Image (tube, rainbow, N blue to C red):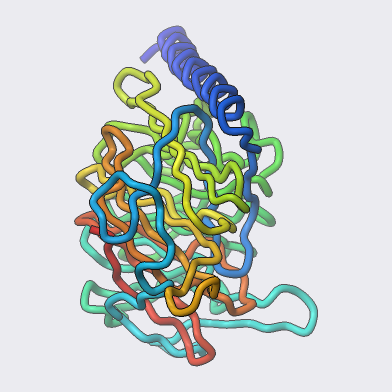
Length: 379
């Protein structure tokens, strides 16, 4: 492709992004005017591993009550506030082959494994930055090996369809490292700071879509920083949200009023760049932060939010937990939900949840003994 053709293609992508963002902005005005909501966002890692995301738009629906398949007002009391899920693996704290590192310094933030991801083959990759490595587990939960990492402050990990592993260091090296999954060799480093990312500390995730590598800017637009070969993209085009795995949409979510339990989900049609819908979900418990926004290979959306959920034991008793929703991608209808335990230990993490290609989620739950990797579903 010639330089002129590349420039024209870049301008076309920019127009699509701008149109999408204009639609988002108009939607926010509509929702705020109708409900009196306030726009709130999260930033940076925190105890419990938030993966806060952002969305903008209008239109409102009620969240399905527990056990229903969509529709109806949300109810927080008819199921337990924490279901453990199926245990895939139990890994003790330490530096051994089947252990994960934990650090509690006298000065500085305590740390546990920062992030996890699942490969298309079902292997689990855990970012064990305390021990300076990636730990790989097979689909049966057994540790199959480790890969070294050299970045100073890695926080997020993603896996491409061909198995290539990407690791984000937004604070010190300010790069996304591209690692060969078989040899552990460094294939390249993509700089994250530049056009669209003036402050790398505001990056809220790493994503790979086909051959493209993206970083997310403050829970909003994603900026393409390069490809899996390690070639940086000097044009740094943007897309208006996280790409779904079926290739059909971009998605964003935002808590608009935490105390009153109001949450937005925005979906943009990927082929056309047109706004598909925005839905407001009104939960009956206070919200703290979004822990997950992703899709499976079929396009089903998974949205999880941490909050003070009713225990169902004695009203108004509550406990910190995560509510996981499965959402129909075409219209935003809730098709299932479940409640899961929330990490409440002090260790700082970046992301505790990831979606499996075949459906369902995998998450890490920390105890004083170690890390429990668990599977769960909301359908």
